[in-house]
Amino acid sequence: MDNAKPLAREEGLDHTLALLREGYRFGQNRADAFQSDAFETRLLGEKALVLRGEEAARFFYDSGKLVRSGAMPKRVQKTLTGEQGVQSLDGAEHRHRKAMFMSLMNRGALREMREIVSREWMLAAGRWEGRGEIELYEEAKLLLARAACAWAGVPVDSEDAPRLAETLGAMYEAPASLGLAYVKGRRSRRQGEKRFAALIEDVREGRLDAREGSALRTIALHRDLQGQPLPARIAAVELLNILRPIVAVAVYVAFTAHAVIHHPEEAARLAREEEERQGQEPESIAEVGGPRGLAAESMPDHGGPRGSAAESMPGKREERLQRFVQEVRRFYPFFPVAAARAGEPAEWAGFQLEAGQLVMLDLYATNRHPALWSDPESFQPERFAGWQGSPFKFVPQGGGGHDAGHRCAGEWITLEIMKESLDFLANRLAYELPEQDLSFSLGDIPSLPHSRVRLRSVRLER
Ligand code: HEM
Image 1 (cartoon, rainbow, N blue to C red):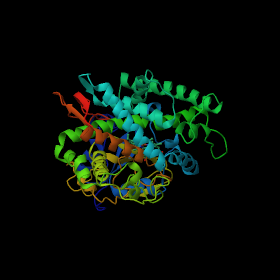
Image 2 (cartoon, protein in one colour):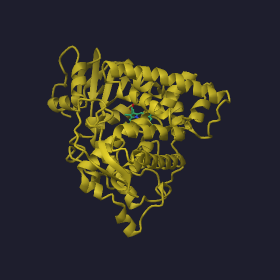
Image 3 (cartoon, rainbow, N blue to C red):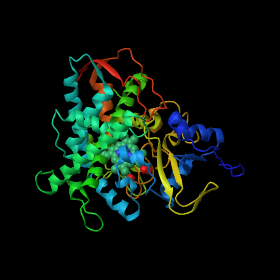
Image 4 (tube, protein in one colour):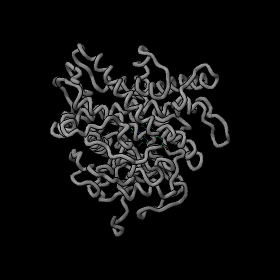
C-alpha cells in the first residue's frame, strides 16, 4: 500500500446498484482501478470501507476493532442468516454459542458425514438410472438436504425431502435477488423457522428422541451464558445454520462438476487406479487425519477437528481430492464478502473509521489477489500441494480462527462433502454431457453454471 497516494474514495451518493450489477467483481474492479487494497464507497445508504488481501483480512478478523452486531443488512437476515443467530453475536456470547457449533465438528461426525454423503450419492445414482437427463445442481440440493437431515438427526421422509431442499435452497439463493426470488426466500425462512422451532420443542418436551451428539439435540438442549435454553425460534435459526449451508454446498458440487468437465487432465489425476496400483488406497476417512491443510490454516485457536491429532498422513488419493476441492473453493465464486462494523474509532491503511462504520472484506478478491496467488485466474489444484496455508490468505469461508472469530463453522464438513462428491463425479459415475450453456456470470450472486450442469444417461461405474 502506498501511503503517499491519496486515499481511494469513490464519489457518488450510493453504489448499491453497481454492486448488484457487477456482483463479485465490484470490489476487484475498484481495487484495481484505485490500485489500492482498501477503498471507501457508499453502499445501502451508508459509508463503507471495502478491503481485500491478507493484511486486510488480518485486520478484519484479528484486530479486535470490529464487531458483528448490526453489520448484516436486514434483507440478508430475512433470508440467509435469520436474526439473533451466531453470526450477529460478539465477545463472550459469541464464543459460547460458537463452541456449541464447533463441538459438532469432531472427527467421528466428519467421518459420519462422509459416509452419509457417499450413501446418498449411491441412492441418487440409482434414482437417475433410466431417467435420461438430470440437472445436477437441483439433484445435489436434494441429495444434500437428505444428508443434512440424516447427519443432524432431523426426521424427514422421502416425500418431504424435495420440499425441504427447496425451502433451504431459497434461503441462500435469495439475498441478492429482487422480486419473486426474494419473496420466496423470505417466505422460506418464515416457514423454516416455524417448522424447526416446533421440532426443538418436540425434543425438549420428550416427544422426539433426538440422537445423542446430534446437531438437533445439541442445539435443543444448549444453555446460554445465563444457563437458559435458547428461545425456540433462535434455536431454530441455529439449526437452520446447519441444514441450510449443507444444502448450499450444492453450489460447490455444481462448480466441482464444472471443473471436472473443463479440466479433464486434472480430473484424470484423481483416478482410483493409480492408487490401487501403488497399494496406497486409504481405507476410509478414518485413516485420514481430518481435512489436512485446513488444520494448519485454521490456527491460531483451532488446530483441526476435535479429537483429530494429526497422527496420520492422508493417502495420496485423498490428498489429490483435497487439492482439487481447495482450488474449486478458491477459483469459483460463492460467498462474496464478510461484513462487520467498527466497534470503536479505528484506523486502517490511513482510513479513519468512525465507531459503527461498515467494513467489508472482499473474500472473492482476496482469493484471487495477484500479489498472493500466482496466475490467480487459472485453475491449478497443484498450488495446494503441501499447502501450509495462512488463515488470512485463503478465505472462501471466512478467515482467522474458528473458535474466537466468525470463520465458518462448517468448513471441514464442506470439504468432506466436496471430496466425496468429486470422487463420484470424476471416478465412480459414467455420464454423457448434452449440449448446454455451462458458462456462469459474475453478476449473479450466488453464481451458478447457467445450465445448472445437465448430465445424461448417468450410471454407477463402480
Ligand atoms: C457451502 C459452503 C459454505 C460457504 C461458502 C460458507 C461460507 C461462510 C462464510 C463466508 C461465513 C462468514 C464468515 C464471516 O462472517 O467472517 C460463514 C459462517 C458460518 N458458516 Fe459457513 N459456509 C459454507 C458451509 C457451511 C456449512 C456446511 C455449515 C454447517 C454445517 C456452515 C456453518 C456456518 C456457521 C454456523 C457460520 C457462522 C460462524 C460465526 O458467525 O461464528 N457453513 N460461512
